[in-house]
Amino acid sequence: MLFPKLGTSSSPTSPPVLLALALVSSLALLGGGCVRRPEVHVAQTMKMLEGASSGVVAVATALDDNPSHVTLCSGALVAPNLVLTARHCVSRAVTATPSCDAKGNSHNGAHLAEDADPQMITIYTGEHVRPEVDAPSAHAVQTLHPAGSVLCDADVAFLVLDRPVYNASIIPMRLQAPVESGDVVVPVGFGGGRENAVGHKVARPMGTVLSIGPASNSDTGAVLGPREFEVDHATCRGDSGGPALDARTGEIVGVVSRGGSCTARGNHVYTRIDAYQRLATTAIAAAVRANQEMAVRTTR
Image 1 (cartoon, rainbow, N blue to C red):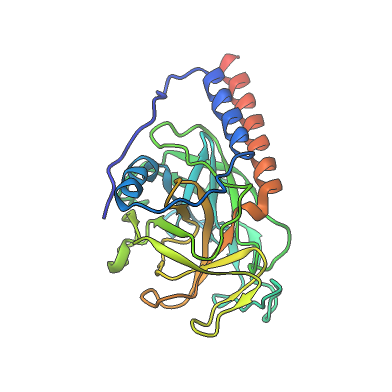
Image 2: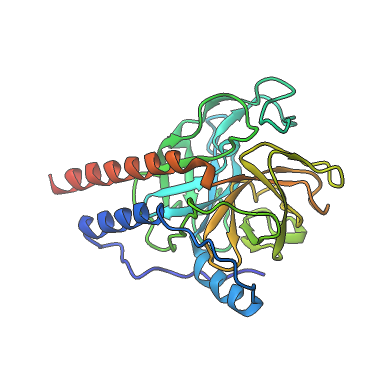
């Protein structure tokens, strides 16, 4: 189902000090993490999704430097001017079929080349996104991700934005408590659900975490590195980079990386967010600096 667009209590005229406080609050979230795993209730989960879904944004990247040719992915607003997504959404691909082992190594060489120009990465909010006609909510100014050219075990990236996004909620990241087998998560992204109508934001059915890396699942064919986990329900083109939300708390526990068939059960691989706490801390600090620089420019 599609979720309504929900705003935050901030307004476009909020002073820089309020934005700074929001960024500091995002830093505080890094120390959180619910380790208790109470029973999942569908009604409570749906209510949680109504509040969190507006924080799932579309990430449009023009990798060939042509604004009319874009790759549409998903992401999550984790601070007013910071988006969490997948690295393969913002870097040039060397291969469309990455092959990984359970140690997080590549079986077929480099998967990624240089990053896209941040100015060619745009962020959109709402339930239905059409980059060719819609006005973006923000542009990226900086990309942060793990080093190297292999997608395995490292398919995560942060985008520092040129302005805060006020018409979307901020979704907390769970960085202290790792996801576990049997956990229930809800993927949300712009893959359009079963119809794979790319550009439509849809929450997938609640899914179960099948396995945690390092692992090889002979039943589904999934091979997971130490920083990855597998979910049973499908995600499709357009969902890449979107968050997996813990069905109890609404916190982000993973980012869509890769998978098999759009309709198959299993072999839907996510990068664990708790495995990249240091990167998240660095990204929040970069967002704080960008906010401070923006405040200086606006007061001149």
